[in-house]
Picture 1 (cartoon, rainbow, N blue to C red):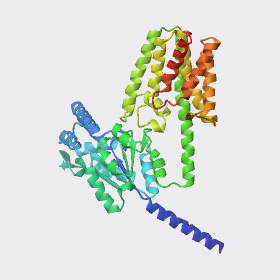
Picture 2 (picture 1 turned 30 degrees about the horizontal axis):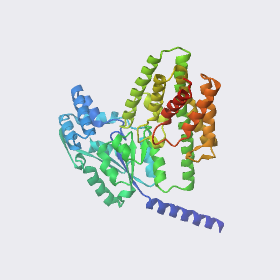
Picture 3 (picture 1 turned 30 degrees about the vertical axis):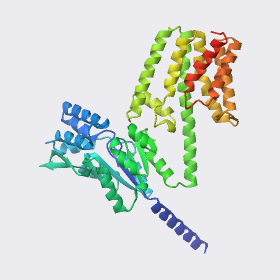
Picture 4 (picture 1 turned 90 degrees about the vertical axis):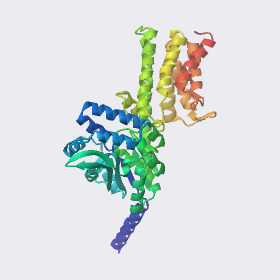
Length: 448
């Protein structure tokens, strides 16, 4: 009897899970170039033809990216240069295309959750996309209709995906066929050719996305690992209590890791006063290096917001950035560098050294102490804690006392902790306000 009850409960549980899975069934739509493939097929094929063909295709892609030409013109102009290219060469280029990490695992895991997967490309011929969908075990694969004659490309291109509204037309037909509505569609994309289907879809996910797609996406994947998509699908797919706990635990661990790493980078600015006072490096070369670093970082951020990784700096930014900051320009490092530059230009060396050292460590300690021990909120800024501000005061005093007498150092510590506690986050970065405000206070009290 007990065995029969156990069997019935097991069957009912399986039935409920199947019904729930069917209710939550989604269509995950992947763009191919830049999402499944790490690069663009048309660029790789152009490069195999010749250097000038490659440069021309790069220029056309650039014009498309900035909105100067349509997808129809981009494909028409590019595929004209492919006239006479043997299919064998196209297949060879396709087989050498590197896939994003864990592409096959991600598709397999999505399908194991009861969802369907479609690969859609407005740049890769349909016969290659059909092969790719089989390789990855996707449900559907759609590409452009490239003309073929005598085992050579003719240079002609057609089909719905060669037109600006082609993806919407194709997906509407597919959704009607499989009985899924737009609210249960998740679009995974990287460029503006997917903005219209992202508008209609329930969820958009950007993968190394350019700025328009990044702004429209609910989630972002910049790590180069497609398995990250599974976390987002779990969140959207009415997760169980266990799933929620797992996600929150992982996010908390990532949050701590990001905070520690970004504060280590923050603390690196302590090398500035040490270099000036210990190594006796002149101020002007230091200012020049800091301004150069600001320019390079700015370029890196612009590239990051358009799905391009600047060597080294991108990896550091990616390791430190909070999830809420992925869609916008991260100003904190610029403020950190400019705070140091202005301090060096405005204040005497000993004051500048003191406030830069405070800038390096006081805010760092305030954040870490606040996250670990903060229980008492500051009345005028509930996002900050009294414990964190006390930590900033103590560390600010110790940093200032390295270069200043006791009383000015104490004033500097108090000033820095007060500025750090103010609700100015949406107005100006405290990497700028702490050193400048503290330095100005020291000048006002006559220590300068």
